[in-house]
Amino acid sequence: MNSLKTVFLMTLLAVIMMAIGGTFGGRQGVYIMFLIAMGMNFFSYWFSDSIVLRMYHAEEVDSSHRLYQIVKDLAQRADLPMPKVYIISTEVPNAFATGRNPSHAAVAATTGILEMLDDEEIRGVLAHEMSHILHRDILISTIVACFASAISMIANIAQWAAIFGRGSDDDEGSNPIALIATIIIAPIAAALIQMSISRTREYMADEEGGRMIDDPLALARALGKIDNYAHYRVMPGATNATAHMCIINPFSGVSGGLVNLFSTHPPTEKRIQRLQDLDRKLHH
Image 1 (cartoon, rainbow, N blue to C red):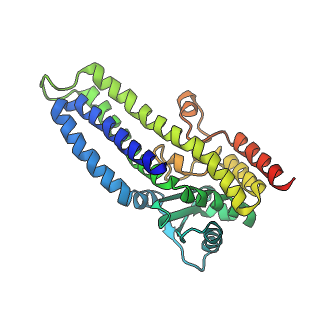
Image 2 (cartoon, rainbow, N blue to C red):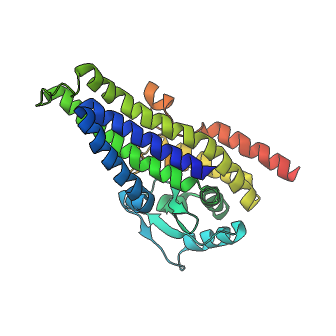
Image 3 (cartoon, one colour):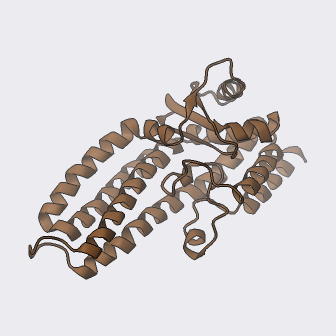
């Protein structure tokens, strides 16, 4: 099912880019954006995880690291290949998983998680991320991050084009109304795609992670602590295009109509409530 979702998303995002190309350059713009989209599909499949890890300045750790040992234990529990493990040097607690499949996956967590959470809470966070690997969510979320970044960049170019105008009178070119539509619709389309993927998969990963460690409350406590911190500090390196990958939205402290409308995560309170309900089912 996730393979079909990946193909659908790659096709949909390519269509969005081709529509943008048509807005700017008519038929020629469509052809150019088609070629760019095909190149991005290839590049995002093979290399987008490396790009995301570089964006956060993540550094790989070896088997001597505490984080590595916890991930190793969880991989054995879930019968998954051992992913690469990365640490991000920031006191802001958060974590994410990336990669194209379970055999080529990576888990990254911040130094803030190691400092703020106890061992069981850290296990809960990492079990959540291992669940994303188990359910093959990681490829979808990583590809969406890559395309969302591209669409945001194109929207910024469109804004400058609207300000300074195009140096062409080609009849097949853009018109002001279409240009404004591109500026508005492209980022919204990217946000909607992120939101539609992220909210459901976060609930699923919470439940699977809670079951994996047989302690949903540990994950619930971790979510509460990370969310509370995120209301005061934004994670360095975080962008709107990659926010959906993190266990807690790194922009939780940013308030506003559009920010809330396109939130990539379910409310943390609801996630905690579901984990508490799961704990009662498992232990009562």
